[in-house]
Image (cartoon, rainbow, N blue to C red; front, top):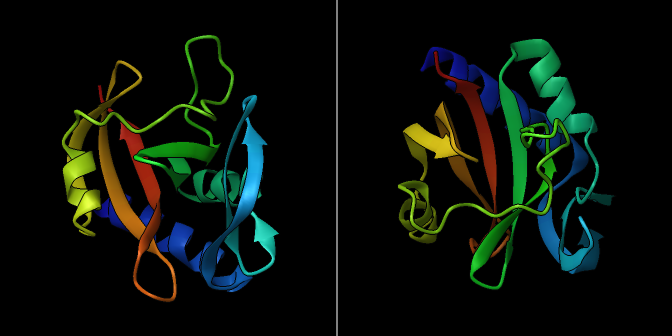
Amino acid sequence: MDRIKVSMAALKAKTAKLGPPKIEGTAPVAGKDVQALYFGTTKMNNFFEVVDEVVKENGGTATLFVKNGNDFVRVATNVKKDDGSRAIGTVLDPNGPVFPMIQKGDAYYGDTTILGKPYITGYDPIKDASGKVIGIYYVGYLKG
């Protein structure tokens, strides 16, 4: 769990350096239009530098999700699909343990399954200036 906290702190620090989080317009991710997540003037949709830096320094995986309707969509991630491609455009499992916590504006730290594989994870809500949940910070390590 210590590794999770270190990785989460790194992800939050790197995004905070860019500026405050906000939603502005839409941008395509994996062929579908979703809300565009920004930190300052940097659009996170399809921008992998931050998540890749966190993983280079701490190992594991990292993702930024944006709230899009009732879903949370991966817009920047290094979680891989079975074919080895980045799992952008995939959504947070609405039936998993994380979804209800984030909906309430709370963090989730613990085990969960991502695209069929077991991970030890941390999910923290991304909130805009008004305190509304607009996305999720995620870090995790494959178990086993």
